[in-house]
Image (cartoon, rainbow, N blue to C red):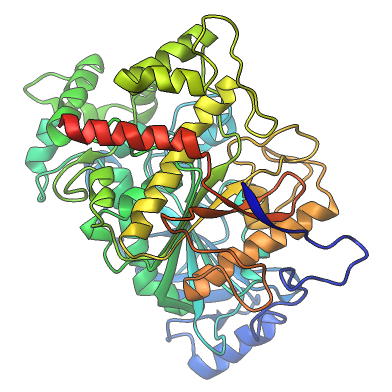
Length: 550
């Protein structure tokens, strides 16, 4: 039920405080002048920007010096393709990320590193063609090297089901618009698919932590340690780091909330359209190892020398033989001591503020109506009749449930697995005393008729393109909505609260009113209650029954 509405201003209105018209930090207007000042005051030996003869900014980071490039119109600088670990190739395939080896001279940092090695699934063909195992690089976007005060840092973790996708190579994540709001932006790559999540008994035996799999998560942790150690060189505050991500990136962030290895590495979290940790629970290490044994055998490994053989195979051969491998985390006792849902439900996650939400429609469920009916029955078991009735599938005829916002039964069932995961995981975090804000993104990229997975990304990054994967015929209202979302995200990164002076108030989530913010179909803002209420209550009931059964 909607209880409060706020319309973003029309074209003829005066600018609303949500829409920033100038950079919010001193120095962002003329980065070139700031870079010169830093060079004069600090010198090239200091871990900061220096001026090279060609006016390219130079910084010193773990491993050596790097040379980036200035952004147009004094907007800042970007350093791309910075190694945060050794290339995970050869004998380092399926090992935790190893420290960077120092280089001599000044390393070029003007091109992003390649996407992580991945198979082609249609939507990622361009990334797959450019992908490499040697992928552990990150990009840093900064508006000023020596701001009056250290800037909040935002670390982006890209999506792609943990089997594909990329960070810096995707133009959608160009950081120029976001850093104008006064943050340092870091965009990371991490291993995906079989290279990022392959567990095997032999790998566990050789590990100093007696674990295997979860390599992609370990890469994210290594990147966050790099941020802790190096971000001050770019004007950032290592004591104010926000991780934010979408889809698999959000899934991983929610998981990181339950990892002791992540303690102190970030201080706020934003999870956009992450899929469910609710059910089934994460696999045990032993279960993941047995999956790995079967995959190794499929690739031709023998029991006597499996790792040497598997590490000798070309990456493309491994991808051809195991493209469909699931990229699931496992409870290894090191990165994850227990299933993430169990940790969050018990209130034992990291003590950090959280923004969490999803789009009105994410993915339609695959299959015919009868197949969707069976999926619901398999998911809900004894309470399936209640679920079938709610989704309009109680009778054998055509489904009766349709919603102008949430779509048909396939849209609703597919998307509720995102909605209700976000709602419930956010509720758990709030119940543990962590400030939490929930949202729903309803605005379809024009001229599309409804939202879809990733529809929010152009708005978050301020990149409302007319060409590309999330392109559209964006209107004035879309630009205002993008400015509003960026303001909330930046406020949150700065203070741990998306609210601030002059902005439409976004209420914190609590278990009594269950308030959330809607970014609506008309690009305005509404405070509503009890997101997907009866549907998510079904998932709550399912979790209660599952816990009882155990």
